[in-house]
Image (cartoon, rainbow, N blue to C red; front, side, top):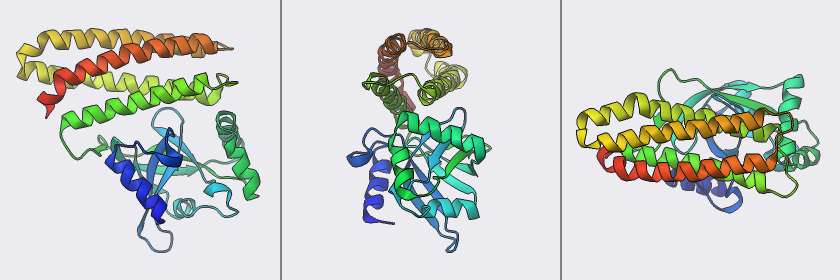
Length: 276
């Protein structure tokens, strides 16, 4: 491991997925593979692209090097890996994309960031695109190592970061509502929907049973979940149009950020202390 990678990994784990320097503002994971020859764990920070559901994509650019990165060679030998996303740690199966599926995924990446094409041209090779698919049977392992309250805040911060990245991409001069941006938005919708469903079905009933005085707060939080769900549906509708209007999409994202920030702040004020 290089000193640079080691520093990024330490900062990533310390700050629940948030890092500065060249990775600031990037979608980043830590990927741990098993050495093809050594059999030892090998962890690297990697940029990734959401791919909907429990799947994300990583690209073996190696900064434009003519050689495939070691982590990719490790995955070819042993396609099982561990992902850390700043909030959770979970196992994943790796699938190296081929043919039309690989080309379509790479085209999406280039549309979102032309730097990927620059890396490919510099490298003189076809950059591999790898799908990482969540493979755990149970819930993922929290990375916070602390209380349920700390995990809740870390999860909220991940949603805040993703919304900020989507808004940044929408406001980039000359940007369009391309295929990757649509997937980013829809992945966010799915993640928020699952998070709020888990709170409605498990966390809120548990807290209401243990702390009857929370009744009014939980009633408000449940109502706010419905408002956020309505905004997520508006987001899906705009994305479903053949030529999605960037200004309309930005307006919906701005409303979602405003509503969600107020909701998350109030939820943390009410619940974090009780959760520990």
